[in-house]
Image (tube, rainbow over all chains, first blue to last red):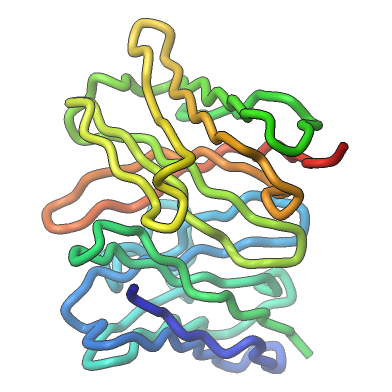
Length: 108
Length: 122
């Protein structure tokens, strides 16, 4: 089965740039989606189709995907960005939807 | 405004069958570019996709849970139902339903319900 690997945690100071990676075999050939989940809340889609932002998501959130790594980049990080972030793809070989293990973003 | 709301039992016993309902509003289950997924999250753990269904009744199940899951929809009631058989304490989790938006070359879960917590215990 297809596996997505995320770092368990990323820490960043306010105003700096956070990069959260999502590794997978040839993930660049798949469409990657990213979700933000704050404590006690449901996930929220922040990036879809590798790099598109849903309406209402700040431009500070961006995404890229190439080779074996997809990356969620959050510029000018704010305290309110502190959350768990999950990447997700559809694995066509198994017809499974796959989530990464999640990354906890801490704003110092 | 698109909303999804999960409902079902808070507590189930081991070996019982869980039935969850997702009631949607703001979009139609007959929309060819929409579908509904079920996802769960055990306490303190990651998201896990369970199943999804589209307007044409196309269904897909998690490979690891396929034998225990059944998904169906009632378009007239705007509801999607998930059943999971032979429940075990490890199935204790928050269960979410989410709308799937189909794009050109991708499906994404763009709106989520608030989730419903299910505990499996005797």
